[in-house]
Amino acid sequence: MSRANCFSLARRLVAGSFLFVALAAGTSYSQDRIAPPDARQQFLRKLALAAEERARHSVRYDPAYVRIPYPGGDVPADTGVCTDEVIRSYRALGIDLQKEVHEDMEQHFSWYPRKWRWLSGRPDTNIDHRRVPNLMVFFTRKGESLPTSRRAGDYAPGDIVTWDLGGNVPHVGIVVTRKSPASGKYMILHNIGRGPQIEDVLLNWKITGHYRYFGPGSG
Image (cartoon, rainbow, N blue to C red):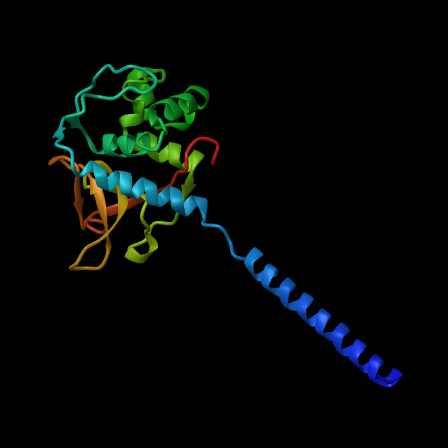
């Protein structure tokens, strides 16, 4: 083989080597760019599913003040109010709102609604986390407070929503993964007096709060 042919062959081999390296590098780069699943979205989905599971339980609506252990305390499993469904859904994921709310109220008691401070004068582990206005302050401080709107598409599974039922009567529920066949809106797990139910009620009342809370240390 002539020197000219050898030089031409060498050039083709070198060019081919660079092309192979470039293609391999491009393949590796594209794989590296594939983002892992969003941990926050995974958490919200787990919370929504935990809320859906609550609909399997028979719970008698009972707003009575009950002395409960701390931390990890709960009223009897067959009783509760709207806040207890939120508390129990988070507890299924290992998050104790009784403890988290109490610790924040101990350090920042003046930030919480004055109505409850007048009643007790100090934090109360038996009831503080079971009051909607307290949860609203807590989720605002330690989670994400999102805009409220009348657009159902602004609300996603795992979101916490609060309402005014009228006459300043507060209510709270969790957006779940199931959609209403009639309206196409995500439905709500809540307890408004008939035990935990999954219903198409997102826009039934005046929305007063819209939150996402991912657990301690996330705020």
